[in-house]
Length: 233
Ligand code: C5P
Image (tube, rainbow, N blue to C red; front, side, top):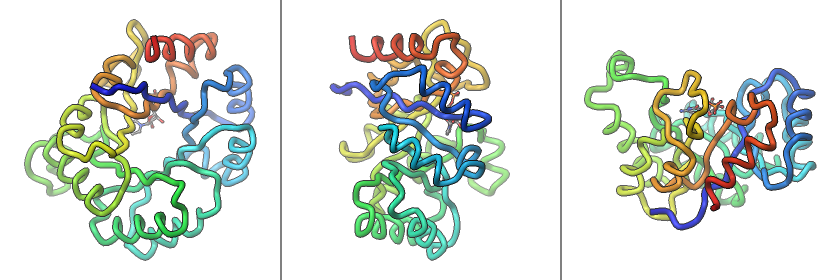
């Protein structure tokens, strides 16, 4: 059982910068983390990250880097100095790339937590086998999570249903970040492997990535408050 409450990270999956500003204007400072993914970063670039940081938010940059070791390390070098707190890379990039990235981050951006992405939640058993990987998905998730952590990667992004298993096998200090969160009675959308905020807390999550349950709510602040209350009271 996780003692402390996980933090909420709002996924800024929105069409433009104005929409991002509008939703942030409607939420208060208890929302301290936001996630910038490829959609927003490729469109708005580093100025968006600076703007968010200047407004007091901590930024999780979800770029899911995956390339040869040198290119991944150089990509991190290009991001050094950006005001971010977490960034994702694919664990299947392999031990050398992960080790290079974690060494670079420790030396140059020690305040940034690198997060390993294991098997994307959009991948099913058939899709995994089509890439040549045999065996159950959850074994591949554990294999990649161990690989990442053994190379010094500080955290893992996982589906909520993988939390209990990963909490069992990974060092306690590993940061676990999970999307696929739906408050009770809310619309699950395209997310299938879901948990409520409270369930994910009990399963050991440190951070909950939440998008549509807040973004699509008539009143984003009330939606945030309800989730916050569920986690903290
Ligand atoms: O709107 P929703 O709460 O489903 O948003 C979840 C966020 O987490 C989205 O930005 C989505 O891309 C991201 N994500 C996910 N599943 C993963 C990895 C990231 O839903 N395995």
